[in-house]
Image: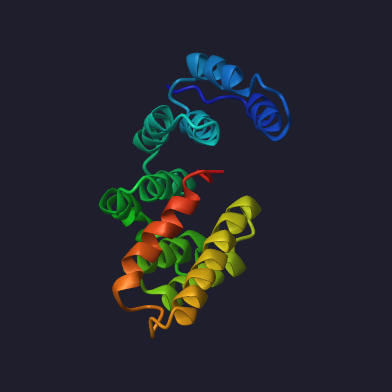
Length: 192
């Protein structure tokens, strides 16, 4: 039988993550020693590590969360998002595949759709799907902030492309570099 981390200890860890407590990673590690098969702990640890610029360890923790709980949708989304912002678009798309099985109207389906359009340099569709996801997402306001950042950056790139006279902001030689630019801007804003 797998023992899950008690809710009160999980809440304490999440509170430490929200505060200026510099001991949250050590707390996560102690909980993982006690409850090593709890995917939520690995997910939170991965989020912490990404936030402090330790991408290799973060990736390992996020992968472990998805291995332990393949249906843990937010962990799967964040792993794919991390892969995308690390320049691994094909890996992100593969990781996100099961998100398509979520119910119609689920915010993560919209977010994955928007980011998939971003990979293809389809900026209008990117904005539309991400806005639909934000409207549908009441679970994770911090994630809405990340998606709004992407929308704002896509619009800025579109405006820059128009000002430079590149014609349609979704087409042309500048589009691929625009997507790369957007992803580079997100590298410091890894999973929440």
